[in-house]
Image 1: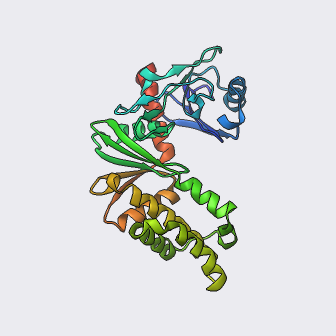
Image 2: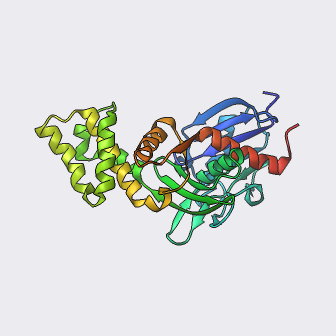
Image 3: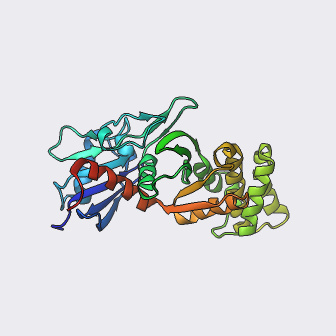
Length: 296
């Protein structure tokens, strides 16, 4: 590991992911840990980092995500929209350690109130790899972000808790008895269409999944796919001002991004897609270059 020039870290609530980086931007190794921000107090971050990448320290560390929250290792105050995605100039250096650890801040919006931590680095990565992009970036996930980007700045954004709602409803509600593990594309499309045309009927449509399972033997895989479609359709209905008539880019895991792309394509909205890990690394690499200069 003598070639490790720096360490890129995406430190979230439940997990920490680290990439050992060569000076030319190549990834030498990927590592992960279940010691996310939610499991640590402030004194626990350095030991957790050393346990994850101690063999290549004291290489400099550049991190994003919940590690910079008020409950994290060091608070990196939010940048307010409209703003460019936070860069090295806004990074906070962690004190009280002999390690060179810097944390990129998140982004906040006053009205309507909203915040992001981690996604802004993916946005920075997308803008670095797609210069001149103007439109909307959607980041599907537990808390999906819809971000209006223009002239290299985050103009506004909204968050939908669709992923968390899907997890709660499919695993902890009465609907859990109706859920399978597979997928039914037609059932997903039907759910999206129902919620887009009648979003006010979401609560009743959700219970119909349980009733149809009991009375009409609705297949468990179809129930799961329609649940996803109903929730994503309701999200698209509420976010229509963001995607209607806009150029849309999706940054996320393939399976979930594909679902959003399918739902948007049915509305005549084509999407560009980018991998979340690739964009995180591109954003962190851009910030690293701002701090330490171009790779040799």
